[in-house]
Image (cartoon, rainbow over all chains, first blue to last red; front, side):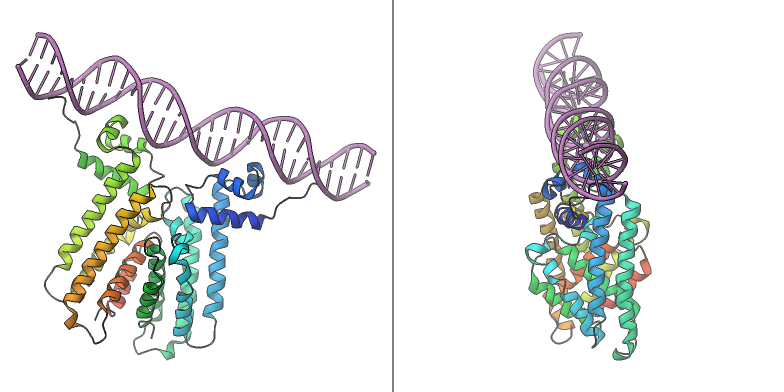
Length: 191
Length: 191
DNA sequence: CTTGTTCTGTACTCGTTAGTACCGAATTAC
DNA sequence: GTAATTCGGTACTAACGAGTACAGAACAAG
């Protein structure tokens, strides 16, 4: 029974994500977010809490987005090999070219020493666990397709490592062809 | 013909490295470095320049250290396979356990959005290039040892990706056994 | 011992930024 | 239409951190 909010929180989270992703948590000032969103600081604080809380919401959204997509891709019919290749391939636009320079918000945040470590770490940990779980589940389910001695658990982790490596090196090496070649080579392990 | 410097610059760089590595560039204040080193700010500025310059010196030292070690290990006699496995294995203490939580200073810095991008990027780029070059050279030299169709260039890059991935995930997953298992699995590609 | 030079430490300036107090504006319930 | 209530914007505070001015200490040269 009062004045309604004049902005869509989701829009603001999108804008905040863009800026946090480009510049990192610390380097982003709230003034930049207010300037980009047109929302004044008190409204931000009222809607999201302080800078840490806002960032956590952004990060969780980011994680949920990738997880949702991973769930869809990894649930596809066909071989686990193809599903995982497609999953990895889907990251190419995000770890090569101009867009790739930003890297991965999650990995970037893991290194950013000045956030509320406890909560951010927990969010990232949950995300990584869940992602690896999806890979592992798919590999286990299709176990019969693989060579003798194939270890789905270790392989899932290896895929995670490769994924993290691609996103980490994205900052320097935005070369789509190379990324593709690495994925092709690594996919030999998933067979 | 005047008062000599009362501290060893190398000692200060070591201390600065420790703090920058633990907390990241932005989150580290010069006051922390002066407190830890016992050196007052004007002396720091006189010796190293501003914060960016100090960090660059620290980062270059860090890079040189790893490069020197890589040169030694990768120059070893024996198979390229063993040399590279040993090189990767050598990182286990730095990407697992308590020490691993810090990750890799170079990778951390690549994501830290607020340094003097141009110079830091150049330093990291040079480091990655040089490292990959060492791997590539060794793989090319021992080309005869490998299976038909083996591509030393792509494999060198894949090893770089795995290395980066291990160091990036070190922040969350400090588990030496798993790291070892991943290295073992990936080394199947270098054959 | 004296002098000139370079280093060191205290104490400051200045800019930036997270977070907030306060008042005016918008909207709903009655 | 009016009261109650929540939102929004301006303008502020307080803290922190990078970089520096200045005065005094330490050393070498003569």
